[in-house]
Length: 222
Ligand SMILES: [Fe+2]
Ligand SMILES: [Fe+2]
Image 1 (cartoon, rainbow, N blue to C red):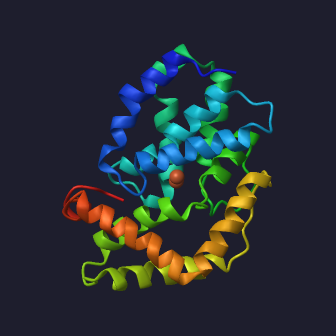
Image 2: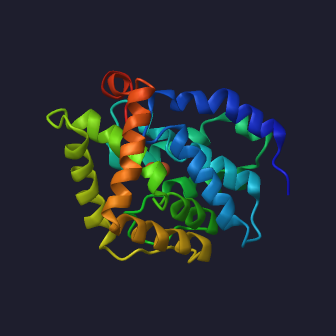
């Protein structure tokens, strides 16, 4: 099934720019969630336009002012539902399913997502790529830990955080074997601290070369 090009054009022109102020949850992350959603969706009889649209809107609520971060999934669902332009591509039932999937995407959700669409976006949202994670994590570290000045200070903080998180059991709603394989590799890559340091150092150098450090602090949200 091919994606509806009208939908893709609309999202690329009118939704993606809304992520411009986000870095860790910006387009780097959204493209990652789109890609991983498609990897999982291959195993199911699902509507790929819905899968795509859910991935594109799932963190949009992070930009809402006066919103508790914990509520961003609910806010993102609301933004999708209130976007009347989407009615050209989806009916009421599809929009409701997509809204619920977005509401259910958080890893901290303590119940099963209400549909396979929620399971897909939730599983696609997990960090299983050390290269992407390095950039995202260094951004939040640079933004929120100004007292840390050297690469090694930031790396050590990021490393300990993920090391701790990796000790928790990893649960996938879909049990997708490709994502599980990626997670296994991600965890073993991470345990090799010299390798992880090299990945983070490359990301650090990229950030410096692109002149992103100052922007991370004063322009981007995370
Ligand atoms: Fe999210
Ligand atoms: Fe996300």
